[in-house]
Image (tube, rainbow, N blue to C red; front, side, top):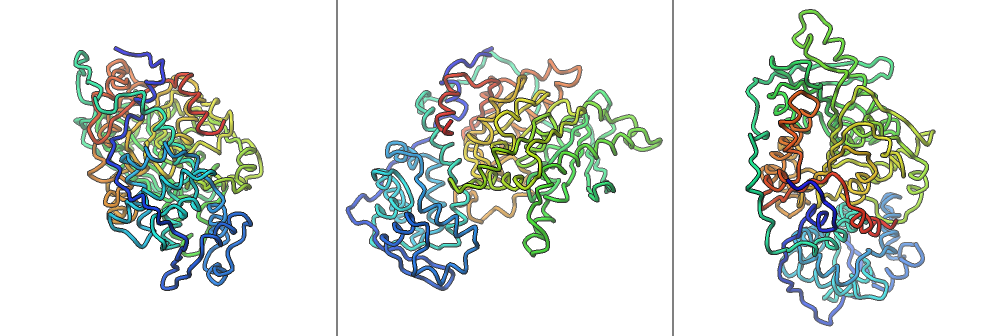
Length: 553
């Protein structure tokens, strides 16, 4: 069995090579010198020269002043910052990127913000990006416009904000990193499976226990927090297995991983999926109505405390006579699973220290377009202290799925993680880009640790289909080549069921029987044409040097 990943080729395999498509853009000498911006029914024509001036002066063109009132202060700053920003890619890298699968996704996303949404429009976008990257200052919005093969470029401003929010600097750097390591593998010949290894059973299959769901409504009076909890359990549950607690993502619900909770419970685990009242879907809906903030800074502290409170309440039930959960809950050896913002919550409970001094400095500067994950972390700058330690010693293992880590844990916060940790990353994740949010942070986490790569996986791919139905047919969905959800992500969910169950079993007497599924060999065995899976336990030093190069360290 291969256990040593001591070369850059290993990490190249982590994200894999991306299939190429034929380049066929029109590269004529015609270029855009006029931009038409559309705000709903209203349009305004701006010259390229005006936009170039705005990029230098930091002031919107005079012709746009009447429309500036339609933009929020944040949108205005975003627009001006974008005009002055260069994307860190040279022409060779851009040319390679736009001819990959994720590059096609990017082009399709861009096309939704332009008047030309047909195939010819996508080809023109490809040409504009490649030719724009040959400019002396490199690729930027302005060099793209100047190179766009048409005299006129029409942009739907509201939709452009939607697209730009997803295609952020961290996402670009992730794709640049992927392209840098991809040549280390043969992009044509797939790696063969390892037939010499026989896997004794399939951990992605459900257990024999019939799953029940107990709905609890808990009230933390000290913090004025009402916390609903769904407890997945069965009569097969025993105290020799850890209690598993699930923390959902920002603006989401406790059923984010309903399928995974059922799977674990069918194998005799008790899974408590709670809802964080300050950062769930209900809170987000109230924020859209102007009744509350989208998220308050205190939520970074409340979320781990919610988990600790739920464990306290579960212990009470464990000791309650005649309660169905009596004697079944090992609350002193719990495992936490967190997704997205919940992944950051899980790491904090595992010992990662919130270190906010660097975050407060970074978030005051408009240095680059932030990812949604970075922007959300910036809310923590309002907390009064610079460091917070929120570890719960009852947490003995942690799984962080697409977690937020880049800003909130500072330079050394993740070095304080005290338990075995598994981190999952999707190579096409725009919300929490893999390079900055997972790969860099993973290197800081002490062993034992595992990094799972889903090549082609997006931010929502691990979620339960019932919580991603609203993505079907919307921008950045499978139809437009963006978020991969529903049946298209079935392979991802199947693999997650296998590795999450095997990880949980590492805290039981059956640990050795399941350890084989936490290996690179099983990741390769479970890989599919749509999703090659990769698993490593350490990033080799030569590969880490490449990582640091692309994150500017």
